[in-house]
Length: 197
Image (cartoon, rainbow, N blue to C red; front, side, top):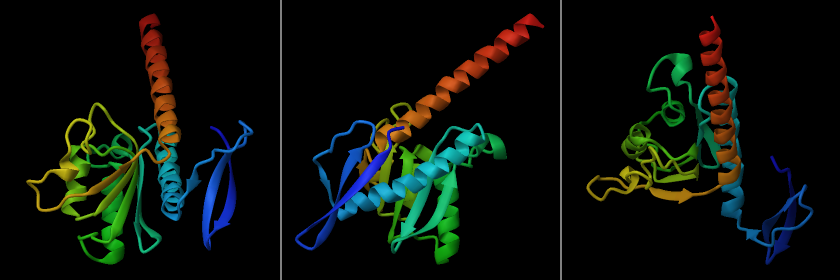
C-alpha cells in the first residue's frame, strides 16, 4: 500500500489538500475539494471495517454511514462468521444507524462502502431512503449500482440514490484482490492435502 502524505494549502480562504505518494516522491497536481477530502476520510473508515472482515477470513467489504459529519453506523461482511446471508456490511451499518437516529429513514445520511452494493443491499439502501452512496470499487459480477443493474436509480421506485464511484478504488480493490488470491491458495492447499490422505 502506498503511503500518503498530505499537503494542506489555503486558497481563497478554503483549505484544500494535495496528495503526495511518499514512495513515488512526486506531487499529484490535482487539488482536492473539501468534499473530496471528506469522502476520502469516510472511505478510509469503511476500509478499516473491510480489514476487520479480512481478519475474520470474510470477503473484505466495509461500510460506514455518516449523519451531520459523524459516523452513526459501521458494518463489515460477516456472512460466514454469523452463518447468515443477511450479514452484509451495508445491512449491519443501516441497522446500527437507524438505532442511533431512532428512525428507519436515513434521509440525511451518506453511505460509504468499499464495494458496489449487491441487490439485497441496494434494495435496503432504497428502502432506508439514503440519498447518497459513495463507493470505492465496482462489482461487475453482482453490483446493483450500475454494473449488473441499477437498483439505486430505477425510475420505477419512489426513491433514487445519487451514486459516486471510485473513491479509494485502488486501495479497496487491492484488498479484495489480495483476499481472493489468498483464498484460492488456501483452497488449493486444502484440496491437495485431502488428496494425500
